[in-house]
Image 1 (spheres, rainbow, N blue to C red):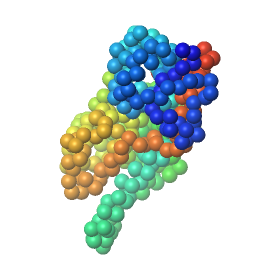
Image 2: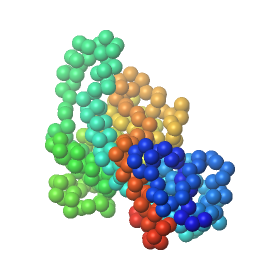
Image 3: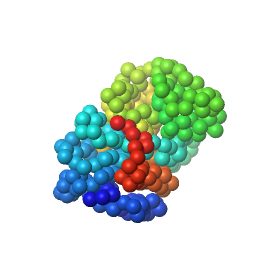
Image 4: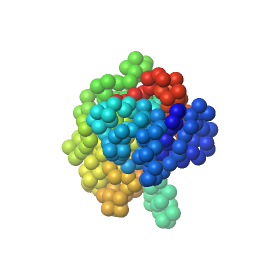
Length: 326
């Protein structure tokens, strides 16, 4: 088959945001569990997949004819890097397409948690208007201006988040051995510091690193203990980077001022996930969302158009893919 592509997400995902497949490609849209997936991979030239979903086994790609696996988001942890390299199949992602959406999510989470907005709404609905207002005043809560923000990872998404916090008058610092654009970071007034400094001195910490062997469990009990009392942790990177049990312990114990978690070690979140076991004030300090930090109509349009352009570049034009991860 010529210029044929297998896509494991519904066609309506693309058409509803104005990013249909180009006419130069003939696309087969199937569910990941469809029995035809394996046979089609031996006929088509490209596979398009969402970043979120079950891991795809090496066996699925053996004897396939594909020239590229195109992920419609940034994360590529559904794929076995060693296996795909051994098969000679390039993997490309779409970095930066959702950076504005993630920046909006992180900034919103920081505001909601630091100003206790959801908590306040709950207390008012419980008839505790006056008592909770008095508590808010007594706690002398800080706004964002002048706060120290620590970013772990400064890729395109981290830079977008940094810009947003800078606009609110925050002091933004980052830890990254290979920042995406050090010159832009310098112009924004960002400060490169050690991981220990990020943990020990930040009022709000936000994670923006991929899930790799080196980042798995990166933020555990010891790292959370290093954080300032009352610090806020925002986890909108990839599940598995933060030890969920340790996070729960430090929220329940009162060490952390709050946390926003958009990604989980197991997705969908399991009923026995410790994050669902918090009680009292600790429960009010935790904001949970279903992996939607990068989800917006605008971000999907950017991601999908870029993905199709890259597939077309490889399959139709015969060029090397952009944004090849491995």
